[in-house]
Image (cartoon, rainbow, N blue to C red; front, side, top):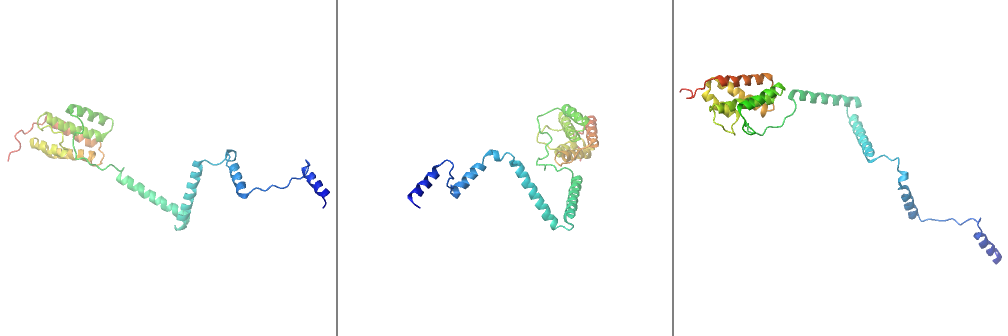
Amino acid sequence: MGTGGLIVTGAAALLPGAEAPPLTTPRDAAREAAERELAKGVYHQDDPSLFERGLERLWEWLDNLFEGAASVTPGGGVGLLAVALLVALAVAALWWRLGTPRRTATSTGLLFDDGPRSAADHRTAADAHAAAGRWTEAVQERMRALVRSLEERTLLDPRPGRTADEAAAEAAVSLPGHASDLRAAARTFDDVTYGGRGADADAYARLRTLDLTLERTKPLLTGPTA
């Protein structure tokens, strides 16, 4: 091709309608440009939230777990459901038999855990608890009323650290005719307060009767004769 041909070709390339030569972009630069473009929020408006993604993963995990367990259980999924039902029934039976788990008592069984109050105060509190059906609290307050009454009558020395068993044993010295009832009252107090057992109306009625009976009982001031 002569010089005239080269000039015509160069001129044609400069014309507005002439076809431009193809552009080539390096691969890494193109990938980064695409990633920047796709990272824009407009492309992610309908994406699931973090919570939704986590929930989806959880369901996938549970589904895989169930399928894996069903594959090794006789009867497949139906057998697995039967096993789960049996386990649930066993747990329910144990719960019904043993009752609600209670905190293990670490106390030494002290009668009074607050400031000093009179026997009348404890009796008022006991009757209020009984009227509301709170039998555990009613039994506790009635036992405290009984012991406080014996202290007020000087049949027991006031002692904050005394336990219910100690109070019953000491009171039996001057009230020997009620020794067994006093021991039973102390045992009831310990059972409902530290043993995790529930009280009822009958337990409270027995304690209330004993409290009122002891108030009318003449003590043996010199103790039992040898």
